[in-house]
Each structure stands twice: as C-alpha cells, then as structure tokens.
Picture (cartoon, rainbow, N blue to C red):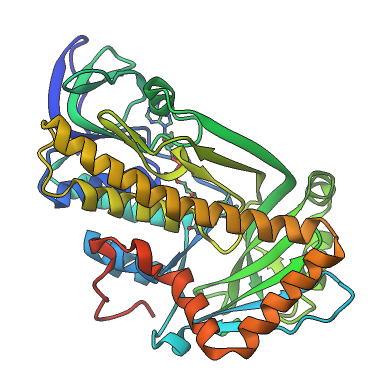
Length: 417
Ligand SMILES: Cc1cc2nc3c(=O)[nH]c(=O)nc-3n(C[C@H](O)[C@H](O)[C@H](O)COP(=O)(O)OP(=O)(O)OC[C@H]3O[C@@H](n4cnc5c(N)ncnc54)[C@H](O)[C@@H]3O)c2cc1C
C-alpha cells in the first residue's frame, strides 16, 4: 500500500527496509514479507524501458511461483523451449550451430520471456496488495548504517529505522556508498539496441543468438497478439558508431538490416516498439554485505546482456539472502554477521562466475584473435557432440545447482507454457 506523506521528522520502525523499487527491490520486498518480516519498500515506480524484455529461466520461474506471481507472468509471457547459437564471426574454421533444448533435461521450457514493464507491473500489483509491505513511493536521501540498527532518511525529512537494509537501489547505489563498499567498474566499446519486432515466420518458442564480431544479435520469442502471430524481442550489441548510424536510419531501412542479420529466417521484420539504447559496462563489488546492509541486483553486478543472466542473478541474490537470514535474530549482531559471511561467500562465487563468463565470451567475439576463436569453436563442438556435457551446460544455465536457494528448489506443477 502506498503511504500518504507523513509529517517531516517522523520516525517509523520496521524489520526490513528494501531500498529501490526496480524488479529486484519489488521481488525482495515480496520475498521478505512472505517470510513474515515487517517490510518497508522505498523507491519511485520505475519508468518504462523501451523495447526491453526479460528472459527468466527455470530457477527464477520457481521463485516467481513462490512469490505468487507466476500465473500472471505466464499469461503475459512466451515460453522459451530452446536456445539456438550460431557463430557468425566468419572465423577461419567453421563452427557448428548449437541448439540447447529444455526437453534434454526433462523440462517443458527453459524459462519465459516477458516485457520488462509488464513484469514490473505484476510485481508492483502484488506489493500493493500485500498488507505486510509498507510501500513508500519516494527517494532515500541518506542512510545511517552504524550501530545496533540502520536508518534511511527520506527526501521529505522522514526517518525510517530498520533492523536490516536490503539495498536494491541500482548501479549508482547510495546505500552501497554510505556502507563504504568499493566497486570496480569497466566499460565495453558497445551499445545494446533493444526493440520488439513482428515477423513473417514462427519462432517455435526458440531463442536464436547470432554471435557476430560486434557482439550477439539475439531474437527472443514473444507471445502472439491478435494482429501479429509471430513476435520476438531483439537485443543487439554493436559498436557505439554503428548504434548512432542505425538509430539515425529510417525505420524501414533498419528493418531491412535486421532481416539481413537474421538471414531472413523469420522473413520481413517490422519494429513495433520504441528502440532502447544501453551503453555496455561491467561492475563488481569488494563485498556483498556489511554491518546491517546487503546488496542485491545491480548494486552488486553489471555485465552485458549475453545469455540473459542479469535479473536471473539478481533474483538469486534475493532468494539467497532470504535463505541466509531465515531463522536469524536480526538484532543479534553475532548471528547476523555469521549469516552475512555466508551470503557474501555464495554471491562472490555465483556473481564472479557469471561476470567472468560473460566477459570472456564477449571479448572473444569482439577481439578477433585466432587462438581465442579456436577455443570458442572447440567449446561449441564439444558441447554439441557430448550429450552429458550439453545437459550439464543447460542445467547450469537455468538451475545453477551449487547456489540454489530454497525458494528456487520446488518445481512448479503447471509450468509456463
Ligand atoms: C539490454 C538489456 C537486456 C537485458 N535482458 C535481460 C534478460 O533477458 N534477462 C535477465 O535476467 N536480465 C536482463 N537484463 C538485466 C536486467 O534488466 C537488470 O539486471 C535489471 O533490470 C536490474 O534491476 P534492478 O532492480 O537491480 O535495478 P534497477 O532496475 O536499476 O532498479 C534500481 C531502482 O532503485 C531506484 N533508486 C535509485 N536510487 C534510489 C534512492 N536514492 N532511493 C530510492 N530508490 C532509488 C531506482 O529509481 C530504480 O527504480 C538486461 C539488461 C539490459 C541492459
């Protein structure tokens, strides 16, 4: 429920304060409220993101089920039954096409693809309907994170005390800075253009990635509409100059170029949304929790959208934190500190693995270097040829076994699709 503004200087008290109302913060508020904690969520409702969709894999689908969001997400999303990868780098030695299918690991789908704004809408509705969540549509101006409790100071002068702060306030997190957590940031010479497309031929619920020298060009299936039976979202990585050039083109010419990149496999393309542009960068943090505060989502990891890892990882942060804090007395500093050491260890392994994996794949595409091309090609051949390796790769992508928190362990009975 959104709270009416309170008198300046008023102090209120809660168990958990979630900072930031993006997808990660909304999911965090729902997860902690579900575990019986008095939860406050503070942040502005996120603005729409043009042409952006989110592919969420099996572990995240289970998490949405645990939050009570899955039925509504399923109604708006398209199942992803397989991922097809095509090397389009014109490297010296031909690399076979690789398709990873959900049926190989006995799942009906690897996950679902949903418009980012629709996902935020579903989570926001659940937050508003939850009597355990106090939703304050405001920015946090500052924090006090020392001592026996933590507090957020709102821009209108209100002070909100909490036993624990979950920082989901994004890449420029104020909470992270106040806690004194260091970040390492870097950039890639790339921009991602995003848009939604309608096309002539069906996608058969398969996501197709062409790996080009400027980065992946990925079509992810979307559900049909009355006037458009075949639809996909596009995430297209390219150089900054190419992005500028393409954005300046008439729509029709850009649609031809997109069809050309997709080798006309889906026929003529029509852009049906605004086009989003996102500069590519990376970020890692020195620690994932400190004192009475933990980082989740883009406060503690950023990397290019390759393999659709970002929000999947953020939801694992949330589910893992909920796991680590379950049955901890938040006022007992020793218990809390032990739980946070565990959280930091888990996140360091999971986030480090994904950040480095995406970095290596991205650089191996954009830097033409024969030994690296050979290594990438050999990996494709091995995964294509060896059934057990292929199944392990699929499983690790959608249900990472070493870091699966409780809220992601229970299979859903009526799966998406
Ligand atoms: C092109 C592209 C495609 C992607 N595709 C996928 C995909 O298919 N699958 C996937 O899993 N991931 C994908 N991602 C990643 C995913 O979109 C992000 O990981 C996710 O949106 C991050 O959500 P977040 O809530 O952590 O951060 P944000 O969405 O940035 O939310 C942070 C929130 O904090 C708020 N905030 C900031 N400061 C304050 C303050 N002082 N007080 C209160 N609130 C504050 C902001 O207003 C914002 O609403 C993609 C990313 C890109 C760029």
